[in-house]
Image (tube, rainbow, N blue to C red; front, side, top):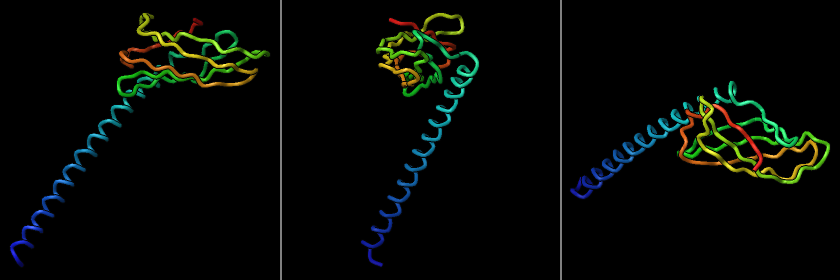
Length: 143
């Protein structure tokens, strides 16, 4: 084996070792993020099942309320179903995130689009600066 061939083999082994190390570090970080996200979702799921009940406003039932945190932002999603016998024009609501003491942590605006009788629409609002573990309930009012 020539000297150049030995160098080439040494370089290839070094590159392979670096690739394995980078892959291992990246994989461990992703696993940590998944575990952290699962812990945050578990806390919210507990709040959804015990604290956050269906809401009704102007004949629109707000149900399937989900609160998620992603990259420090809180996102509230829900279904809005028109339970009346008439079409409802779009209107804006305020979603108030509350802690265990009933204090408002943050307010979010959301739009419920025009809905026909029996129709369900998805609503979503996002805000930053709130710890998901502090949210115990929400209040929805018209603007």
